[in-house]
Image (cartoon, rainbow, N blue to C red; front, top):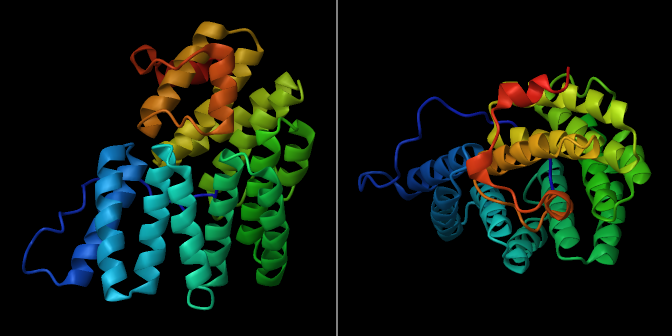
Length: 293
């Protein structure tokens, strides 16, 4: 899917959109902010409720920008619930209907999300076709963030089929230190590099990638990003036969995400190796990070 824009965990939960004195747009915006907060903090039930509300109100108002953002949040919830066809419908409907109305960057993000969903659905040929279309759009847009997004989603396709070398080539668009203006992107990319390096059997390099990813993910204050970095750690721990620690890391990743992301190919690969993650047996982050020393 798309590389998330960092929003961080705000110190106070946004106020509810239930005040009858609020105009509809304000209600929709507050619902959207609560959906973003819920995603960042692993509150999947609230993500579903608030994204549904935001999408409905913005749609009624005909607000293209709000509908696009609310649709992204809604598709995230549908994906986590395993409702992939519905998630894809929300993304593709918005992408097609909003062409020319939202920025090229927003189009790139939505198209990347659609490719990720196609991968999860096992529609790899269609995913690769849309990836080719995405490359054209990225080349025209020309920004570093667009190149990062394209490399990330291309790596997602290759990781799904277990092709570590191809995933690494896709991620080579990002220098090892990551994107200086968006360190949370570096956390995501390095986490994916670790997963690819594990597939290549390159243990030391995988450990080094996780060493970069985890501190950046912690500083992002974004739980899905930290959960992704922990999947990289989990893969490395499993590779080095530290099975119990790998299970603890796996459980912590699920706890931070808010639930098991069962349609994620990386989750599925780890579950086949380690068994179902047990949130109750989740490890402590500092102790797990110390295993990298």
